[in-house]
Each structure stands twice: as structure tokens, then as C-alpha cells.
Length: 444
Image (cartoon, rainbow, N blue to C red):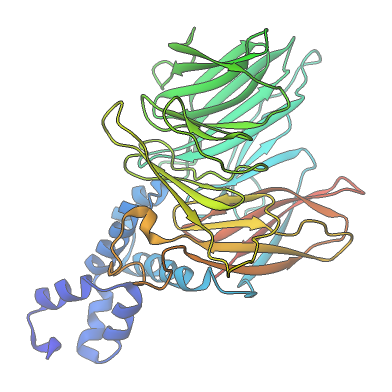
């Protein structure tokens, strides 16, 4: 009966299905199979996914992608939704790449085909996976009187841009440099575009970017921490002074914390005491390593997700300044009396999370990773939304796991997740030789 309907009606019906059902239906007869080659069908399906899970690099390519490329993205996403929470599954592939011993951090760019490599001196490389040489190198060569004793990097997303923020501490005479770059890997060519740079004297304990702002926390000299907010942009990449400064009280230099810029009027601090949109709400996320989703800016459109040691924490802002924060705490899906166990380095997005669950290797060859499919309710999706599998994940999501084999002398330095592709990247260091390598894991 369906194949007797006008083509545009058939297309409208098929568009309402999820990727798995589209493939099943169109395989039932030759007449319907032709629908699968209709570019508008897959364009609509992928656009619908990107509304919930933005990928700036992919969005820029949508208009030029073929029907087969669009279909591959949608079908791959559906496969990930089914596989990510399987227990003890075997990843489809594990690829290893040697790298220089000066590599400090690696970050997968949205789409999973490009890698940002951060070197010890703050130099940057933009590499396409498998390519023998970087496509872009941005050098930050140090002079004889310069040195770096601490370096951090963080990749964050908005609907339009992918930002990399770099913090160098102790460059010269207790000077700290903060850089923010837009990362682009699509036409006209791969590039790092500097949109902000700040140099300050004294110790900067953490920094973040969002929208047109850089925020950094600096020791006041009397034991307090002061948050400085600086507007930046392509037209004003090096502001002379902060626009706003806030003293948030006594702080220990030994106490780690993380800043997220949620909007033009709200920040979030994550620290050993809890998680706090400043002066609005606080909650206990446990101690240890912070796993915070990279979609922090415009948090009224996409929730901020924090994978704590005991539960998932979800925050959503109201677009109105001064309005309260919608906060939910979602327990992990564990049997009664069971414990989650060790949570090491990890990453969390809006659909998926992963963390190292091997507390002590003691020379073992295997490292275990816990994977987590987040409940769709955090996005306020209805249970019958065609893209997200009905009630399969329940109200708490579902946990899975996989194992990879490493050299006994290797330990994990850095882990990043590109959740759209399900690709995981590990930076590994051999504690005996100092050699480093990059391991890229494809779940599906």
C-alpha cells in the first residue's frame, strides 16, 4: 500500500522514522528502496540530529555532502546508540600512532577525523588521522629565559564554533599566557584562528572561554581567588583589562577546580566542594577528576552535563537573566547495593560518556573502560522520539564496557571522546623510556 502513495507522501512518512527503521522499510521492496537514495531524506535526518547534538564542522559541510555521506553519518549514529552500552564488547578497531615525547594533550575535533595536538611549549598541530605530517603547525618557541611549568588545554563547542583554550603558566617572570583559538578543518583550509590572548602576572589556576568571553581565576596575593571576565573576539583579540572581576573568597592552591562559561551572565565552578553556578545553586559532585560536557555556552539550549563520582549532574539555564537553574541529579544505573567503582580519566558529552575504570594496573596488560549511554531525558526528548530508541535506555541510561591492551609500562596521560563518531583517543606515556604514542579506538 505504501508504494502506491505519491512519492512526496512516501518521503514524508519515511522521514518520521529512525535510521534503523528507514533501512528496514526501504529493504522490503524495490519501489521503496529507491527512497534510500533520496538526498533530502538523509539531509533531514542528519539535520534533526544536529539540532540536539551540534557539531560545527559537520554542519558547515552539510550542503556539500552526498546522499551516501549523509546516510553513512545517520546510520553510524544509530549503530553507536545500540553498541555504546554493551558489556565487554570488542571495539571495531584500535590504531596506534607514534608521537613526539613533548606532546602534552590531544583533542579530537568534532567529526573525529582531525586531531589537535598540544606540545609542551604551547605549540599546536592540526593533524588528519593517518596523515604523515600535520596540516597546520603553530609554533610557540620559547627563548632562553622562558620556561613552562604547567600547561592545560580544553576544547569547547557552541552551535557555530569549536574553541581551543590554552593556559601556559610560568612563561617568563611568573607570567601566564591564555590563548583562545577557533579550530576549523573545513573549507577553505584547516586553520587555527586566534580570537583571544591574555598575558597576566601571577598564578592563574584555571581558565575557560565561551561566546565572546575569557574567564580566568587568579590568586589575589592574600589567599583569595579572583575571577576575571574579559571580552575577546577577532576584532579585539588582546583586551587590555578585565571587564568584570569577582573575589570569591579564600582558596587553596592545592584545590583543583574547573570553570565553565554558561552564558553572558552565569559561570559554573566545579571543585572538590561541589558544583556551583556562582551564587545561585550548589551540589556535591564528589572529589577527583572532573568530567564536564564541552557544550557549556548557551546552556539554555544544550544542558551542561557533569559525570560525578556517584551520579550524573545535569544543569539547564533559563534564557532570562537572573532566573533559577534547572538542576537534576540522575543516579547511575546500578543494581541495588552495587558500586560504580573507580573513575579515572574520562569524558562526557550529551549522549555518551567514557572513563578509565582500572584503579591499579600493577603491570597488567589490560586497561578497562566503562562506557555510559546517557538517558535521553536530559535533553527533554519524548520517549517516542524516532531518533533515540524509545525506552531502551530507561530513566538512568545504561552502562557498558570494553578493554584495550597496553604495554605494562604505559600509563594514560590524556583521554578524549568525539561522541558523534564514538571515537576515543588516548595519549599514552611509557614510564621507563619516556616515549609517547597516540591510540585511536573506534567503537563501531
